[in-house]
Image 1 (cartoon, one colour):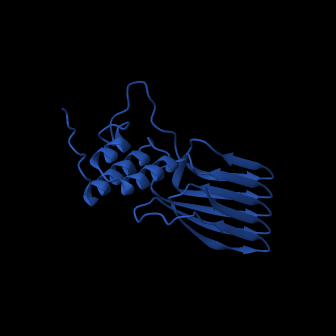
Image 2 (cartoon, helix red, strand yellow):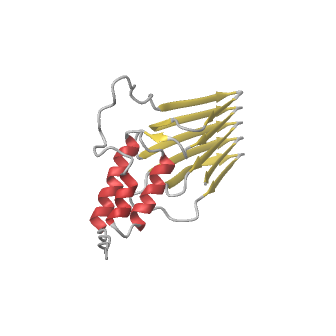
Image 3 (cartoon, helix red, strand yellow):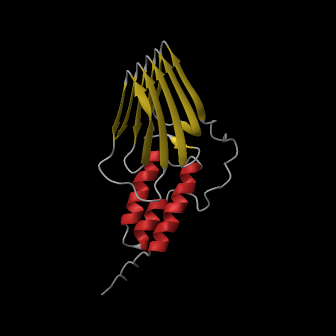
Length: 187
């Protein structure tokens, strides 16, 4: 007769340590914003140490492990996105700078942050749309703060269904629209 020992319960401190480790891996480019937000949510919901261990099993123990020989460092983060009489689309895996400026003049920009890799977990995006528009999609579990104004244009913010945890990554969006529109939505 074999009996398995019960799984050890996780403490609040162990949950916080796991979230901090996930945060460092996200900044290092191993996790996208959406992956980090999802794992962070599961870490706070974890009941046992095994559940916490499963969240980091595919990551190196150190968040700053050296790159294998022949691997290049991550690409430089996007700092300026400019669309004049045209459009720019950022989807999939791309690096978002700590401070990113988006300028749309009679053009548009579509930024999908769900698979973006963050340079810093506290990022600011400044969007200026003149006779143009911008659409920004952020994943659920990210703290989004939108400010700015619209003159003869529109600004629409559609927040997520749940409040992000206190240690969630933060994206501040400064949105300024003149004869244009800016939409921020959570998916």
